[in-house]
Length: 540
Image 1 (cartoon, rainbow, N blue to C red):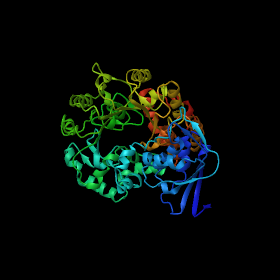
Image 2: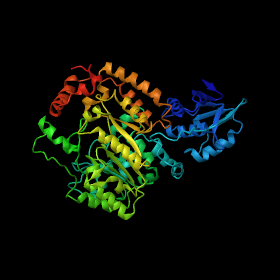
Image 3: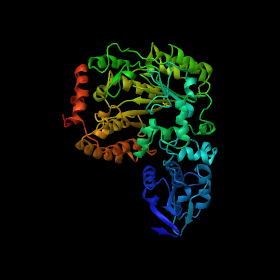
């Protein structure tokens, strides 16, 4: 369709979406293309808006959505009956746009309905909008292109290190491979070694990095990735990446998985990240009994912590994982040292199984009392007996009590469920999500789906077709319930990601599946089909 001298590739009528800004986001995203031709436009129309201030919330939301999807403003033709559109949009462009180019605004004859906003809020963010507009406006066009347009650039190799219990070092937890061994070398030596320089060089050139295929795969499915999220989260540090592929040893983000001490043996985990996995792994022949139960990274018992203490003045964020971080004494020591130094501005993020909030009689709440920027990602894959099956050792009552105490003592803490979704729990996940929303344990958006990639035999992509059909039906029904409630689209994107995954045509390997399930069931005196009766039709 052609309008004037423009080729209209799609039309969006904002009136149809009322205050459902997530669906508006999804509609516009469908029209996204990596490269727009100069004459191409997306036509957006509007005859009403909601007002709290001098500008409409639909107009503000539209600009934020276009920012998020990374469509240049010049490809948006906005047609409205709003006679004051020029003044309103001038403010929106200045305040909310990351692009100095304005929309192509056209005012046409007709009535315009100004409605009171009431409780309606503008579209603010999805998982990738983790930045301040002020930060975006302070960086150059080239830097903006690196963050928003590059398909391979990631800020993390310039600012971050991930360390696992086997002493492997990498830029992040999603990277498949290692860039160093901290049992042999210092973190400073690893920081600018050949492996890390090569990664940064390829990213600057916007070339594919072999170890980054997990993020690439997620983005191909149309979902958020760690790369896109971190690029916007740490956008204020983008200048570091432009200076050199050998940046100063100045760590902003530590992903600390320094040992494998854990009180659970989750089905999606293994001995490398859980000491509780040692006995069952030996029993079913996955590891030799001579393998150490406890794994700890570093060249000595205190090596890593001594090195991290040297970086505490530079850090913006620490991510505590494991193992189970809330039973690791060394993690408490790091937070206590931050407290002593007055670094209460630092962001503390915990990935915890929610089975304890005490260590040697000391409450985690006492340790956190001076810290205001805390996030908790609760590793919970299912509710009740299903949750106890998937994360063996879980006592569900303890999980509920921890969440209740957290709500009572620290309602300000950013809390979300991080749900690893596999063939086993995939049908239950919507029920679990809705149950916790209805109980008041989470808001609808506080639910992140982590798509399981390993072990492969649990990946939902390999589910048999009958199960994929049931998943599709149930998830579409769940999304109908969720869309009006999740105004930020945070949880929506995860459920949509599962729907995208099941479109991939991969074969279910029943032999491999049951040969892994049954030995552990026997060891734990458990039964998959008793805990998850909805899987009774799985081929055996």
